[in-house]
Amino acid sequence: MRVFPASIPLDGQTVIVVGQGPMAEPKARLFASSPARLLWFTGETHDPVASDIAQYAKIIRRVPTRRDFRGATLIFLAGGEDRALAKLARWGRSQGALVNIVDSPAASDFQTPAIVDRDGIVVSIASGGAAPVLSVDIRAAIEQILPARIGDIADLARGLRGTVKSVLGKFDDRRAFWERALRGKARDLALSGDKAGARREMLRELNGETSARAGIVHLVGAGPGDPDLLTLKAARLLREADVIVHDRLVSQGVMDLARRDALRIDVGKTKGHHPVPQEQIGEILVREARKGQRVVRIKGGDPFVFGRGGEELDVVRAAGIKAEVTPGITAAVACAASAGIPLTHRDHAQSVTFASGVVKQDGPDADYRALSAPNSTTVFYMGVGAAPDIQAKMIEAGRDPATPVALVENGTLDTERRVFGTLGDLAALVEREAISGPTIMIVGEVAGAALTSARASAGQEQFA
Image (cartoon, rainbow, N blue to C red; front, side):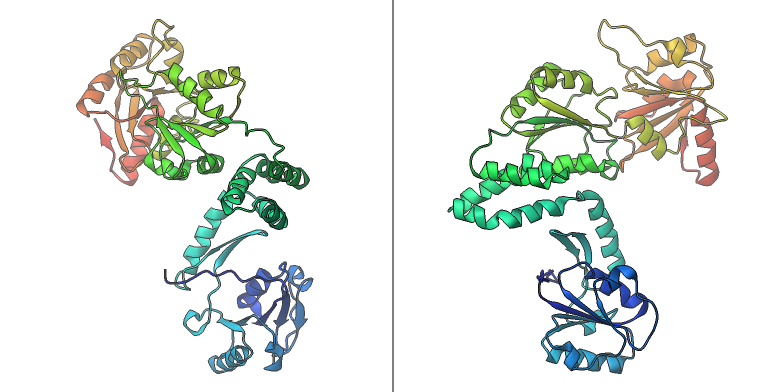
């Protein structure tokens, strides 16, 4: 660890900014809404000061003296000649302050981190001044993950800390209380904006008035595999889950976002091999939720698009357990986008249909006449093993054997492979190219148009 991101309480402290313009203003704005006393020496300028800063800071339109630095905790020197900056820095240090010379990390006592500010929760990202742009990008990613009201929870905890310590004498008891309070109903109330309700719930928890935590099952879509395509809510639910029930199409990158101490139950299936039957999956969800656990049932793609999520939702709700659904980017959309294939196009396809290559045993077959309509795109899930049937039935229903076909294997992952051909050669194409991974099959003129475009720009696609 090259730098240590210490936290400095700002209540009752004095922060001084010296300078003007784009180097000084962001530093002043950092503290504009803090409890610190903010002094901004702008020099002898009459340039207007941003209103959000002016209402908090004391604006002093001159250069500071040594005496002005007395009692300061932090001093930011933004712009000026090196000799003048060095003198101001000596003055500040002589008064016991830490000095930051903007854009001169080696000459500074500290560097300013990129900050995510949620009032009660502050996250700092530091690169030691080496790569501030990278720190800003990381901050943007964290901003998206943290709930807007996460600071309210910290404020509630701060306000009750003394009470909790007086009621619960043992450290382990206090820790167990905070785990229940900050991961349970009180937390949910605070995030919804009900701070008063959250405080009441925390006190009820402290007084032993709450019943055992009710379990919940979240049916969550993991998307096509690339963890960057996971929704923000899905990522949050993974971090909070006590139990994660996952299938084989959930990538390791997605699973890496989960809590390390969460119980993980693999119920993955492969063709002809179902070690955990569907009925047993439902039993697992109900069993774990009845223990008061937060259960995440995570599926590749979207749980309601060929994911049997509807069946699992019915089982959980029939057992009287609360269940919620968080959608994911379904494989057809994600894989087509990754391969540069528009599923609809004004010149080639006015509609798109998602179909399964595998149907329920003894169940009705798909309507291949509808799936074979001209000027349309048909996307098959689980179609590799059924390629001969799909080919024969679409051609029999009237689809031209010359219709372009695209196969996207392991879409959005590093191992993604794209193979192009025609409907009349579909079964042979699958065998010839040894397609074996999870694959989306796209049938329609859009596949041919995408191939032509790709060849023109890169020439890297494979056509069989």
